[in-house]
Length: 115
Length: 112
Image 1 (cartoon, rainbow over the protein chains, first blue to last red):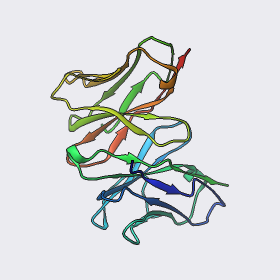
Image 2: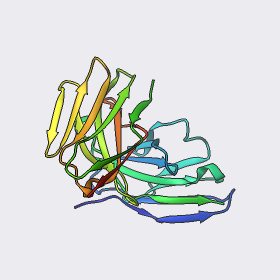
Image 3: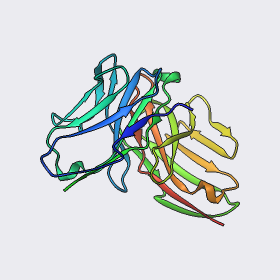
């Protein structure tokens, strides 16, 4: 069964460092997303990406965050200068379409720990 | 108005019992309501979903009940099994977009 894969599974970084989280969405999917889950809290939407541009973003997704699809398979989330409060599990997701074809498939997540 | 409120935060049920998790929303623009199941160390996985034009949807042991006038929906797990022990999230989405708004999650433990 096709799946969304994420790397790394866990990253530890110092505050102020740049971090790149990588995702390989399901191959025929057209919409890509990042969500995050702070430990013990709910899953929160960060950004959606379609046709090589951001289609929606939340208030959390400020100038410190950026997304990119550098080639035909990868989808990345960059955090420019990490803060302690960026520590969370980051989930990549993809969907074929929107509406009735918009079922999201999530990866297993990348745990980011900022010290 | 974007919030989805979920209760209870945690639930313990005996094997064979019925697990019931409730969610409420405010935004009437939401028109797709999925439930996700998350096991430790894994991403959320779609369990079952409903649109507001039906009041109930059943898939196996899992049933969603939807009350449009009350803006509430619930997940019922019949004949709960220890393998159902997981965190369950309700969510809501406006059909014009793909952004999911999640509830706070319910940690379900089914005791053997």
